[in-house]
Amino acid sequence: MATPDAPGADAVASKERELAWLKTITGELATQTIAQLEETLPWYGDMPPGRRSAVGLVAQTGIGSFIQWYEDPSSTPWIASDVFSSAPRELLRSVSLSETLQLIRVVVSVVEDRVAPRSEALREAVLHYSRDVAFAAADVYARAAEARGLWDARLEALVVDSILTGESDTELPSRIAALGWHGTGEAAVLVGASERSVDVDQIRRTARHSGADVLVGLQGTRLVLVLGRMELEAKEPGGGVPEPAPFAQIAAQLVDHFSNGPLVLGPTVENLVEASRSARAALAGIAVAAAWRGSARPVEADDLLPERALVGDGLARRTLIEQIYEPLGRHSEELRETLWCYLDNGRSLEATARELFVHPNTVRYRLKKVSEIIGWNATGAREALILQSALIVGSIAERGRRRPSQKD
Image (cartoon, rainbow, N blue to C red; front, side, top):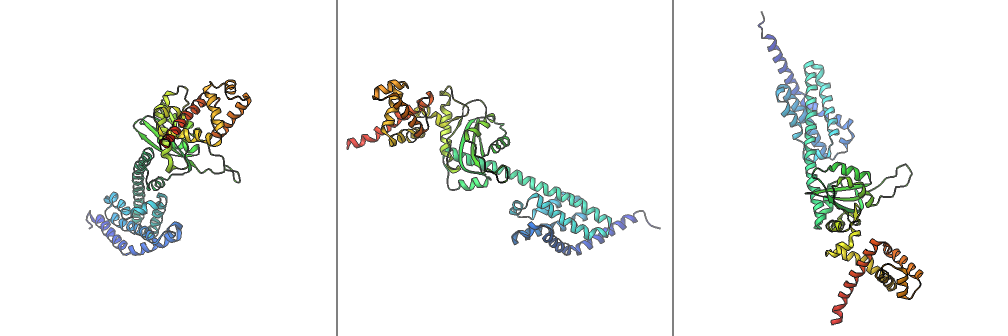
């Protein structure tokens, strides 16, 4: 007569036989899995030999771990995670989560086709284990993504700080590339105040919708955005590429991400490596923006050149000289003299004409020529202030250069 524990003894014996059988076909399963990977996954065949070997190692580890798990199901969390512990770090970076799940599907399919016909218990074990391995893969990639996100944030802060301080080195381009920067060509820096809880992802979406990539730096209550143009594509097949939006227009779309206070856009520079010049101008503009009652928001740093020059900003003085004073002198001393007289006479055409002994229309023509050469119009109140500041700063600098030669 059979004892009550006989069925349990039979189940244990059956499981031991299945375990012994599984161990004998481990090599066969591994070989079939590699062949199936080559046949069904094109990306596997395109990999370098070293990475193909690493993927194969992961597959073999999965098969071996399944056998251990079948022997002791309570070890599921550790065994499933061990499947990916054998993968080198560069493999996790080069194989996406989607490709990893494809790999798991191939391994499970091979194992299931081979062992499922032997018993229902083995088929169910394969299904349960494949679920645990899939969750383990998702966990590994989630933790890797989290670590990458923290690393990217630190690297981005380092790049923005280098741009602000102007202490860029030969490593700056590689750091920018590591961040996945999509900007090409021109760049500009936007500086203002913001809360600590700024939504960085929304800033990126707004900028990219406007055709710009962005680096974000939050330094206390100061928010720094480094903007770069993205390469635009034609909206319709065969259509032309749209004109990129001016940085001033892009900055206007980002105003809502800043809190109240001055918001200054630095001048456009040729590329991101030179963005420190735009950053210096923007920071100098922030310091004096409140001195202009009617300033826009955002305001361009070059529109604050007089205020910046008054507080000793060397970059502002050089800009006034290089963009206004010297170009006028190179073109015609007559134009520069006419501008001096016009501004000294309270922007009166008649008074200027009398002082220069010319017709008012001649003064009007010369002022138009000045505007064409330097881009500023002397008939506007604000632009007249900028032009007069340039004449003063340029004249002082020119006399300073002449003085040593006179002593000699």
